[in-house]
Image (cartoon, rainbow, N blue to C red; front, side, top):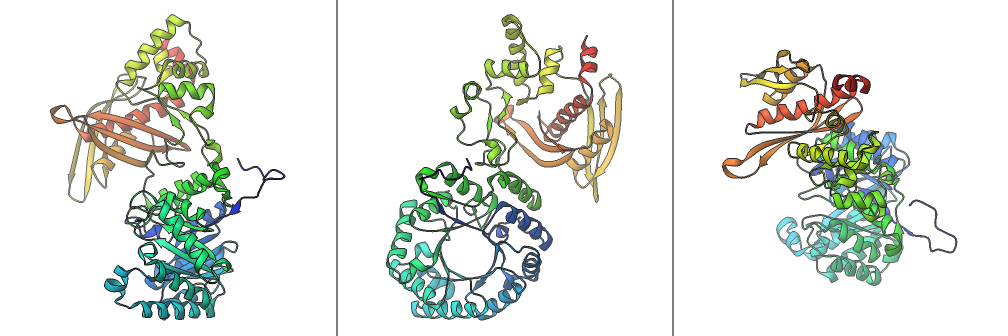
Length: 521
């Protein structure tokens, strides 16, 4: 997928990636980062091959100023940008934050739409024009690389937008950004707007046009791709698509759309796509915002297949149900998830991979047991299959006998009683920052298994009187990731069952296979 352009073929148009994860992305509620966290993420962005990293908004806080200085001292290859309103004090603060940057960019903006002019700025068209030109000129006195943005540009009158853009270019702007600040426009409108500006504004072909699209209507990536078709040569985006309200254009989706559909767009980026998943996971850890499982490219289900029809196709040829190779974006491989929707072909294939060659009658019996097991748990792992093949569909392990959880005073407490694999009772208690934290600590003490929680979700399964609580955990034990599910009428008990589901699988991996086989002999 990353082969050089064949001889005689037209080289793809280079598209700059302007990453605003550390500025617009961080503005997403709950995604604030410390300067040190920003520096860690900035390193990952540089390793990705991002062309421009927007490190923050220096006039807004000391934290943003410190982050800009930290990153400027360390990263020498990518262009480092900071955001500034069209205010002299903002521009001066931004310039100071970039003093040690090897490749500094000042990014100045002003609102241009009628709504913003009237209600936010309370400025006339003439005042907006004058302020934009003056502040771009001031920024150029500090640095040679100045980007100018027309906030709410897609809701601005075309003729006035062209006038403002022309004034910014004449004042020295080297990049012109036309944001879809409210995620309001459509791809056809976006394509036409960029083509209009580039064709009609004096000096437009001497600068780089940029798109900055929000996802309020779920069109951020589509609008960014349309902007490229209209002549944009820079796209502003974020890792995992985080950002104000519904977020920004997701870098991983844009980059892979250009990569996979290169023949259509005739454009590509300099991003090392193999680092997309690691960068996504790093950001998720830094800000504590899990990536939804069905997220394109970097979601846990992006290359996972459970449907029997899809699994059968994948076993014949991976191209039947995959348009990208998981390895090309940073996943280890595709995942054939065994669950309720899986068919006989995938089940048989997985058993053969585990070393079980069964006759048809034996396979029929094993498949029936597998389907029964799927009614009790959503995902069946390899260790579950081994337990099934040795006559214990539940698998060896700890079982919950009783538990008591209380949340009084400053800390919560939990007491659990378990039945261990040999049938003996084990009781432990622990304190925690909340009832679930205390419960998991008590279970860890009782089983001797240490798990690092990455994601914890509870929700209702079913409706009315038959509804039950389901808990889903994503954890790490050492370098291995696990997921567990528990169901009960009590969500705390469901959480305990989900934790034990994982702990028992961890314990089975620690027990040599020969011992497990001997135990079932």
